[in-house]
Image (cartoon, rainbow, N blue to C red; front, side, top):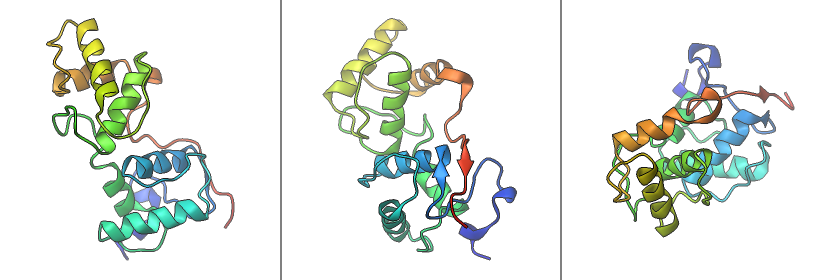
Length: 169
């Protein structure tokens, strides 16, 4: 059995998603695809455009190209999203920058989520650093990540996949 076709029950909190599934887990997957540079609409509907993006992502990352988001695809989608895995500064891009921007939004900063650490992101980081009496250089290190995560609403952690339901069999 391929790593991507393992039943979801062997890996807690990681649903296997198929084309035509709907729900919050699909929306989370679409956000991650978007953060990796795929122009998908985040609507919680695993339609044909999302399936094409999933297959392109799988091809780019040497995964089994089946359009199913299983264990291996989730792992690859989320591995760069985990906050604190690298120092971020203006010019960086990727899923972790997208996650940073979301955490800044949760912490009250009006900012667009693009996955690119641009001037707008730097300004929001500097404002956040000043609010917490940190060195205000715009660099996101483990201290900044910890503070951002500590204020994340509802205690929901990155990668918690809730609200999943199957639309078609």
